[in-house]
Length: 126
Image (tube, rainbow, N blue to C red; front, top):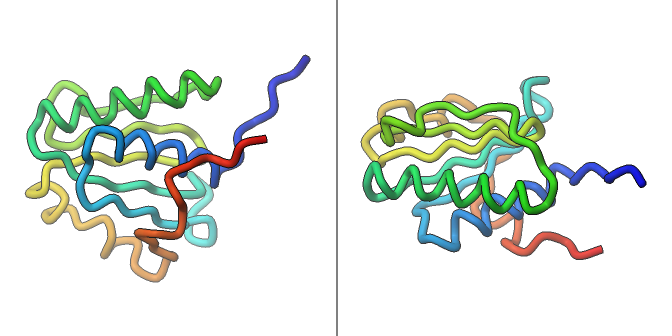
């Protein structure tokens, strides 16, 4: 039996729930489907320390793997200032507040639909 691919929106919900589980701050999702072909959504969150940033990304990684999603790659897990998790349909960025303010991805993608509450943290159950 072939495994069905998780919908982008459900993957965003799952990532947000995993971030909320261990107290990520200022979680934002940005719909970039009309802006780039690289990914559908970007999820951006802040951690309180380098260790927290790594823990947040590790938790997202664990939760998506439980659902059968294979990450395409990750970056920055060693430094802890900015970690990226590429899940194909979504890219998760977790940063320290100083890095987030400096790189300002929200401004970079201004015009793309941004939401702090578009997705509830519970994936649809089917």
